Length: 315
Image 1 (tube, rainbow, N blue to C red):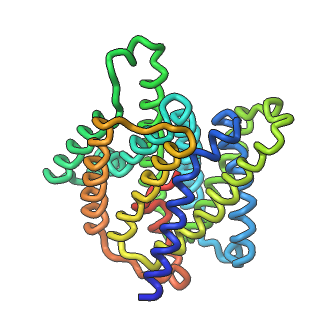
Image 2 (cartoon, one colour):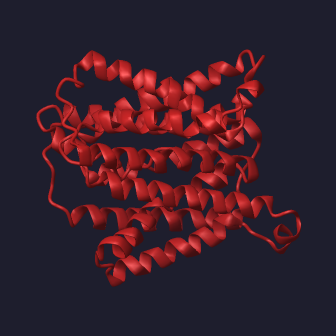
């Protein structure tokens, strides 16, 4: 019981941190490509230091195949972040975050499309409920179609970010025998050369205190947050992980209102419980269909690897 309480506290803290990510992105004042480049740079230093301190590089467990899958997942993750941060600019942190939490449905649909996994009638119905919630949350009005389309573009960016996260989940699910920390380290390392051509270093000159926000994104929202999440996953049942995952959008919405005065309207708010409920139903049904994994990541790195992209969504 003490172990589960510790895991609950760790995952709650991780999700609260994730909910503050949007403020760090906006306050940095950097472009989305620059934000993600420095996030992966500082995140690689933080995660790499932790992995080295634990001595996990000596017996990493990677094969050429699993390393290639980790790299491919990293490509999806990195551009997922770019699109999500662009969506913040065109919509709001609240709207982008809620729309982004359509990820579980993409995982189900991708599984059916790529691996012919069966979609039950119940899952199809819940995906329909989530789509109805998405329509409400989007808050699209006829005026949005004639005002340059920035808001619609932002919604599309959040949806595409969720799709890329779903692709990363599908890819990473096929990596076994590797600790999730090592998979995450590979994924952020991939982002450094991948985003280097898009980074505008000239725009970063003289940003002063803004560097603190970028360092925080790497050290806090990538290093510390991932360590807390992976420690929690080894101690918690799937149902609790799925429920605690929604601390992230809840905190993001509160922070967006408290810091920037942004809030979703009444009609939009009606869509939030539809997406949350449908996501929980689809996620728990998907996870319960698979065999239970050993609970201790230290003794079973192959079990830990199954939670590298778990039911709790992280940005």
